[in-house]
Length: 233
Image 1: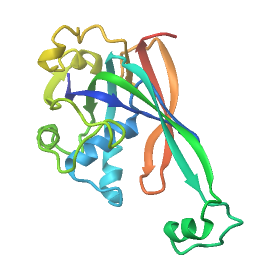
Image 2: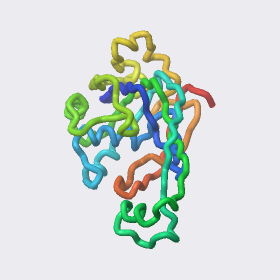
Image 3: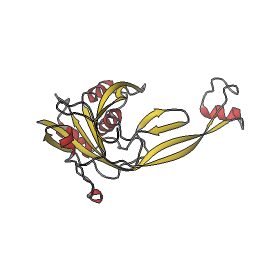
């Protein structure tokens, strides 16, 4: 048996860091390891500049259960920039816009979200960097505000963290506790489970993700192998 920390993420909207281009920032169907560890780090009060604290988070293994896939939603932003020919090395963005006057480059950018999201999360580590009970307490009383991918995506319910023992992360994820309004959702029948490798489990397929956080300040990430159980191949 392995000890797991499980909790639930529900939100009206969320966005899960696809490759960020200049004109479009998409979303994946489930949050990667960096997103989950970032949320846990925020609950613990670990800042991005705290390299030892961030490094300790990488010891945790993660499994995500997609209980409700959400509905795609796209937002549009108008962005203006100053042509480099107008001003070189401005003292500030405000100065650049003042000098450029009406000679600005204007583009429309796109932001993708998923609406009405419900996810289960399982964390484990052997040995654990800290007691799971301490992490559960932090998720109940987070130091920093938690959100689902972007600051415009607040959570719609407490995370309901629970420390439990199970044979594997899939079994643990069946025990996540949902808000009352999601009582009809069957935690044993997720759309898919995306998990770090766990001995004894045979995935339906494998995926590569660049979502192991190496340097939060420079946004450097390493690759990992993810086991996908269920879903569409």
